[in-house]
Image (cartoon, rainbow over all chains, first blue to last red; front, top):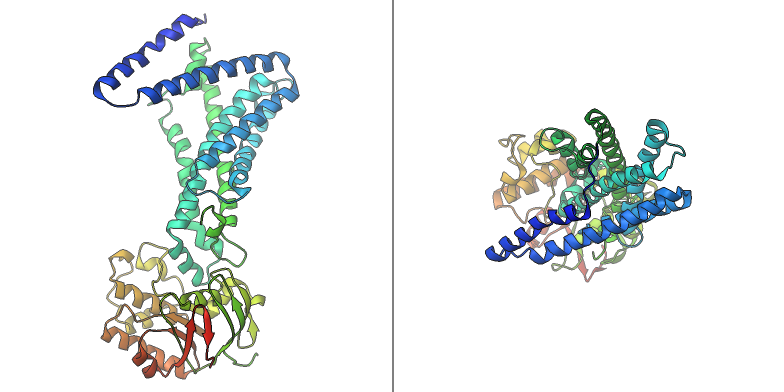
Length: 264
Length: 201
């Protein structure tokens, strides 16, 4: 029932990249180089991941599984930091985003593995790694957008927040509008994805499952579960990240502490 | 009940200022004078604990260190030269004590609550900030060039509101560039240079 695309078929799909490159050159759109670099990176990265997954899946070693997941989380944490226009100084620059993303992803992944899916052992890499990866990827985006919005808001609206503090507002009261904007910014991708799913787009995971021969109803059930889990992991990581950000951007004398951002 | 000693700064240092032994007594208002950048605003911000600072500040014998920052800022009210706004509309800022009277006294009663803040003139925003601050009936008031953005008529309205408050024992420190205003309000001069104060009252 499943049709396995051979290496030749995969290469053939790349023909459209060459067509795009030709058009880009003719119209001087200037994305040839970056497109080919990205395509090459993807090919190398996925080939490597395929190899690693094969080793991890066959070994079924707990150490290897958690090692791979730890590496994924470390890279995603770095990505959050790299996406910040204004990052926190010191350990917080990496720590806040990485920990909160990991917190949301780990809680939701463990929940799904132990209660919903129930493989044996619960951390069986075939389930744990892809699931954790999806949680991580979405929580990473949410936390990065949320923290970026928070530090941007507080920097831009400092005078207004201080005016509120001057009336005797607590730091939580004064930071509420900034927190709301940050939380919204972080949740928008997930909310948009849930809104458009099934109407505008078929999710990649579900499409992949159907192409690989799964029953569409089963694929839909999996997708629904994964989307709920993603929204949960993103929301959890994001909320804790924004709260942590507020705590770091203020102090117990209810002052704004932009000096705790790098380069200010 | 503590004695009405007014605002006493035993010592106060921040990145910008370093002052000691200043007292502003009730009913004996002080004009904080000095060139731009001399630390007038920084001193006021440090007193209300808005910037990081070290030191001991008391109001009527009660140290701010024993008080939460929100409570301290409700007791010692600071109104910056360029007031800030956390909401988009005038009405978003009216949740505090009723300011109907002080807004009317400063000629703002025609402005509806749904008016966006950024549609007010600079002078209207300044007067609104003052009206909201006065309505809180502070025991101590720190005003940072409160009438710099105002025409003479509005300036007179502000001074007419301040006069009875001073007479009633308000602790007032006011940064001003206007010697005439200092004379009209009977302010004692306190000069700040390079973040330091000479000639303590």
